[in-house]
Amino acid sequence: MESEALGWYGVPIAVLGGAIRVSTPFLFVSLGECLTERSGRINLGLEGVLVMGAMSGYAVSFLTGNAWVGVLVAGLAGMALGLLHGLVCSLARVSDIAVGIGLMLLGTGLAFFLGKPYVQPKAPTLPALHLGDWSASPQIQAALQINVLFLAGIALAIAMAWAFRATRWGLIVRMVGDSADAARAMGYPVAAVRTLCTAAGGFLAGVGGSFLSLYYPGSWNEGLSSGQGLMAVALVIFARWRPLACFWAALLFGGAGAIGPALQSVGVTGGYYLFNAAPYVLTLAIMIFTSSPNRTLAGAPGELSVTR
Image 1: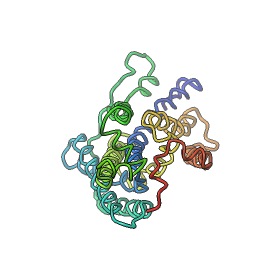
Image 2: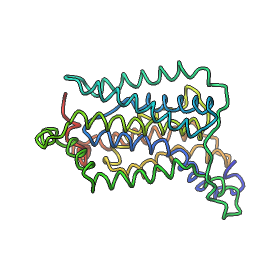
Image 3: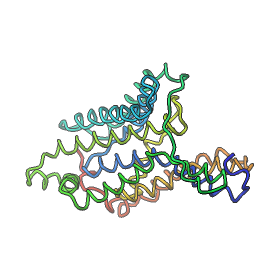
Image 4: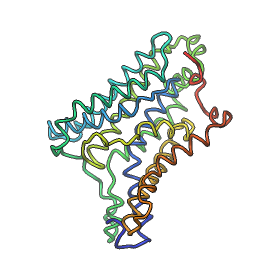
């Protein structure tokens, strides 16, 4: 195992490596949801989008022999579901929450049905960048095997933070999310902006799903996601709708998910399932911590509280 040779000193290394791997889907899904919510809409269907992205990416990788084509198709599948969510929510008297739950059921159901032929076949997976070759320690080398999507997620978080602060596009999204009336008074199409943001958010969530099936754990099965799409919504709240904070929060969630395997690698088997539940416990703790109205509304787009 990754930290066995180093004993307890290897546990932090294993947690670091696990945090990098496990955090990547959280990062893409949370950035997608951050974009969606900054426009004033919430998408609770991210679990279905994530699973659909994982299935479609794996299937296309198997059929084409190219994992990167699978990533692209996974993003497009997520975009299609996000666009569907955005168009339906643009109708009068439609609840974002209800549509999101329906989208979650639709996405997971389609993925399970269409993905049955790809449970057993082995598809090409994404390569890793070996950033730990400078070290003679196999444990450090294993921990620093980083996928390109992780680095792309960091770059995307930085770009989104800059765009929200310094570009006309970012200011329009923020205005639509904070006050639809003000945006309409300025002549901006509120429904179109929100639909485009929801579709773009779905694309990012689909890419996050492809990471699960094409890199870590690197296979397709119906229990692949384990609720990561829903946890990403709590992550965005914890990050206060800030893209850079989404990156650090994703690392925190990833590290929580890596604690169990890291301790098991040094022989700690007691309470293994409890340690594996750390991400879910963290999600619950975050929701409790943010249950205060004063904390919840800090940094939240104003339109998220509007009843439609």
